[in-house]
Image (cartoon, rainbow, N blue to C red):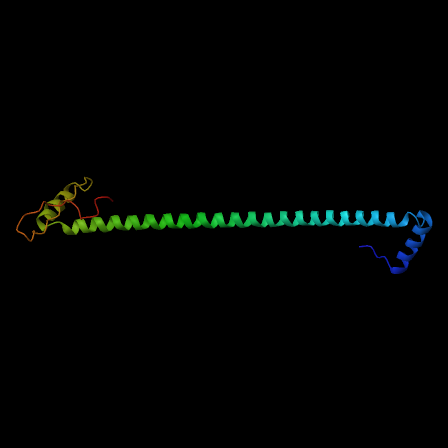
Length: 148
């Protein structure tokens, strides 16, 4: 910053010795040393504050990037969950259609041919015979799909 050579420092010291005098020169030098130390500490504090602000800006940018990545991830997970839900519903309807007996399919097909806009309720599923000889009630849907 300042280019001060050794010869210039000697000239300044000789002038200070003549102007200030030998009695007050040590006290003035000590005061100047303290002032120079305070100036250095102040400059270091300003540098540290600037560095902290730069780091805070970087952290803010990083936080915004992480938040945007998290929102993108959340939206992709939500989309995948919707796709899985629609797939499960389509499989459920296919299984319900496949589980109907041929006697139930023929009237339903005739009904669909006559009025395709009308929705028919799902037919009950035939129940498997109980091994103990007791008859179980008929189910209207597959087990586990009643909550969907």
